[in-house]
Length: 186
Picture 1 (spheres, rainbow, N blue to C red):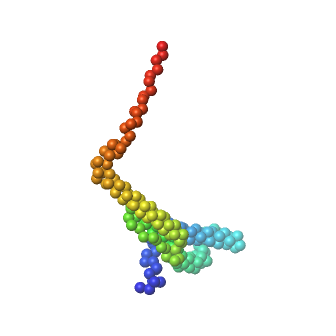
Picture 2 (picture 1 turned 135 degrees about the horizontal axis):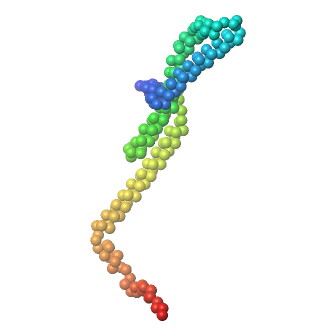
């Protein structure tokens, strides 16, 4: 497989919560735009045209706004797909980052992450990889210290006379410390 083909996304809608909200907003903005244009056209017709009944202006809207409505309905899916593609450039990296963080928190082996060339937040990948390297370094250091501690502990347990020797080597010539004598008042 050529390297350029390797980076093509197979799935565009990867985070339904975020991307669904964006699609919903695009559709809501489209509807708000249509209502605003309709209201503006009706107001313009009322102000500049001859005096006519109010309902006549709404009946005439289909003639003036029909083509614009059809054109916007044709463009709406293109805009929605584009929003999904662009949102995939920031939701995809966040999903990959979240998966890697979960695996790292569980103590699983995690490889450094690399985002696609056009993805947003490339610096997150670099910062995560630096953190991953730090965690691995600390884990290696801790496991080395644990191994040394186990070796040291096993050496002490292997020789029961060691603790006796330590006791025997204490200087017995020292006088025991005396306790303070109670004072008598009286």
